[in-house]
Amino acid sequence: MPNTQQLEDLTTQVRRDILRMVHKVNSGHPGGSLGCAEFFVALYSEIMDRKDHFDMDGIGEDLFFLSNGHISPVYYSVLARTGYFSVDELNTFRLINSRLQGHPTTHEGLEGIRIASGSLGQGMSVALGAAEAKKLNGDNHLVYSLHGDGELQEGQNWEAIMYASAKNVDNLIATIDLNGKQIDGATDDVLPMGSIKAKFEAFGWTVIEIEEGNNIEAVLKGMAEANAETGKGKPVCVLLTTMMGNGIDFMMHTHAWHGKAPNDEQLAIGLAQNPETLGDY
Amino acid sequence: MKTYTYTEKKDTRSGFGAGLTELGRTNPNVVALCADLIGSLKMDQFIKENPERFFQIGIAEANMMGIAAGLTIGGKIPFTGTFANFSTGRVYDQIRQSIAYSGKNVKICASHAGLTLGEDGATHQILEDIGLMKMLPGMTVINTCDYNQTKAATIAIAEHNGPVYLRFGRPAVPIFTPEDQKFEIGKAIKLTEGTDVTIVATGHLVWEALEASKALYEQGISAEVINIHTIKPLDEKAILDSVSKTGCIVTAEEHNFLGGLGESVSRTLALHKPTPQEFVATNDTFGESGTPAQLMEKYGLNSASIVEKVQAAIKRK
Image 1 (tube, each protein chain N blue to C red):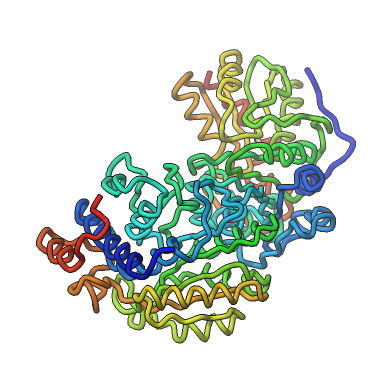
Image 2: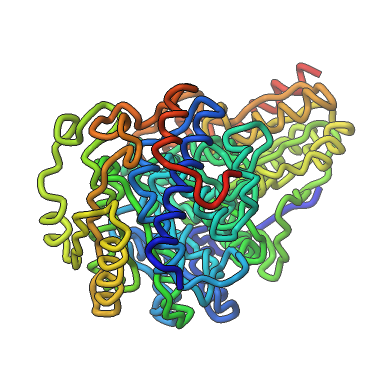
């Protein structure tokens, strides 16, 4: 089991990967990716019980679904660095003939990906289906999913949220990335959603809050708490408070880096703030 | 001329229900989902026999398509059931991303397609669904013609690995295909041999095409009727072989001429053998309330319309 320093080193390296990937093709979504680096590292290094080899059905292991597919850079980096495919392949992000499409897809057979995402609001339904399949298969493993907070403006989520508690899907942990920002600005300015916690609770979910979503130990503790709440008849929601652009000072406290790549100078500054730990690809 | 008769009429949706019931008994991976239309989709018996393999989603079709996609991860073969309108237009993006692009083995089973839904009117009478579904890469599109064929198709698509759109309807229509038929996806069925015109029909229009061929025979016109149950992939060889002999073609479907079977046939002919073609289809319009027979007459989707179009096609040879 890796220690905290090893997880933080991996997180720093993931931040470098994210910056370098989006810089190279001058496109992509660094903001939300950086905000969720600790979550992905915790999930894939510690939290999930994963098999050595990838197969689509994932019977006998925990599964993860990314609903807000635009944060593909963090997903690809962590998948590569936890053994799903070669880290060298990160070089191909968003290039022609790549398996690392702008938004994740199963279409090119990239190991670790089980559903296409990008058009928002669909991932929770898919995670529910996978969770129901696990129940039918007598497979006691869990299904995890991640969603943006802005993404909750899509109505399909609320169909899924209603279904999950009505049908006692208690092997699902849906995490909401509460960074309070979306493309056009603060979620509270674009379409205020009120208390997301109160809404999930009103829909019959158990809610776990991780207030320091960019603190790896806090994420580990909160996700362990969430795991302990599974199997009790209710779906589990984790409200993960994160900082968009975390770890790169000029990308924090703004929504400006949701979908914008750094230039050469900005890349250099960002990389200097995150020294190489495990080796660049 | 080979003629077809029937002793019983039944709705094609009941053929789906019977096929699903059989799958419930023979294939443990088959699961079913419904968005509050169990009775309309005739799913009752499957649910009675396999309650643990049925998912009542409620009136939430987008969620149903996503859950179906997720169920395939774990080896299930999900069959979703709702009206054709709510199976396609309402959930196009969910099907596109979570099912088609993701390559998921979901069977989208759609009842009450087209004008024959009847009195509920245009909100429910989708005439664009074949087009929507055939445009999705990797999607198989099937439109069956009677109870027996629908039952056979339902059973067959469980063995096909990939997304399928299976379209059927509400009214009772003649049963004229064999009870013990083997359904081959993508394989057209030649119902009558003819030399003057080819009529390719799908769904409820297949019986109308047979009726038309009898009337044409009285007029001395020999029509070759082909049942195209699979619109995608299209059996191009069957069509080309037939028009090589007849020299003109009429396509017949309960769908808009834009995006339907007729356009798929036109493409095949344009690429390989330009041939005069006439279309029996709705003319870029919505439907309205009425009885199925009234609607099919008003919108030109019955045997009389096929006869007229055949005469027009023959003149263009």
